[in-house]
Image (cartoon, rainbow, N blue to C red; front, top):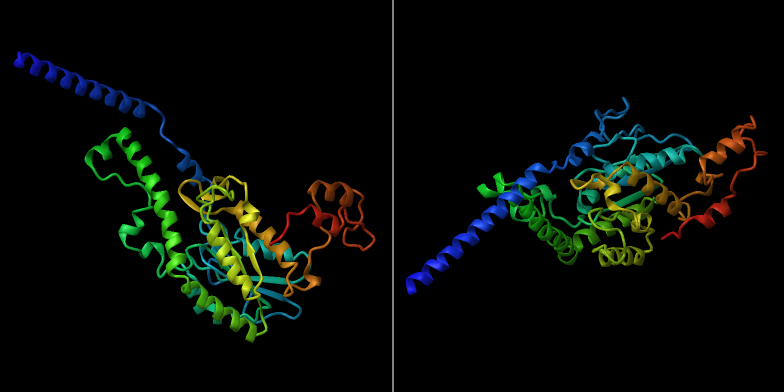
Length: 362
């Protein structure tokens, strides 16, 4: 009797294992039949095939202006990290160069991009004398949420980098089974998001002085040199850009309150991107969340609207007139054959009307 019960249990176990094996084999077959995700390849093809720079520039930032400032020139220097430098895009695309292109339509303005990938606020403080050597009228400090780092993420221990880096299958089964690899990737990504959030929260809770101290030093040096100084904060494009879902709202608020308490102009670019699908803002969606060309254009436009309200920005440097549609400019200005630069030509939209249609500034 006991032998019969034992055999019955063994049969059930074997059948259960066989069922699991069949289910696993079926899932493995499905994952092998399904077409692989080729979006990574497609997104990579969207990146430039080659890069270039002006002959006058000695680096890939594309700065053409020398240390000597021309008569009547208004000069802005941008200090920042890779969000200012603009990796994997042409030098014309990052927001400093786009801002320069906009302002140059009204008067002679140069924007010097000193953004350096991997730089923290401490590094930017050390670069501040170089920024002053360009005789700027304004220095803009671009801030990203990893700025209190002691070292760049690439130099962090593997235990930190691996906790929210890309999934790497380690077992033989994970390396050879698409189904197991898919499950492992999903579990890793879930843990990775939590680790990524905790990492940045840790930076601002424990390394606050690595941002606050160099900021205070740069602010003081700018004031002593009679140079305008402002701070621009970028959001991270790894998360939904809504106040309810974006996990770093409190950090943005804390930075803003601190900077404003020193009477330093401050712009939080989160409002410029709020509600936009973050994938549309990423350099390589799902792989590299640096801001892409679209994000840099949005940032440059928002920075201009913010700058025109700051005391360090002269009224004569403002763009005027501005138009809500390019079609209006073509149809109502150029079709007539008149010179749009003449004072008699009425703008399509008066400045006060356009300002009323623009989102509130921070």
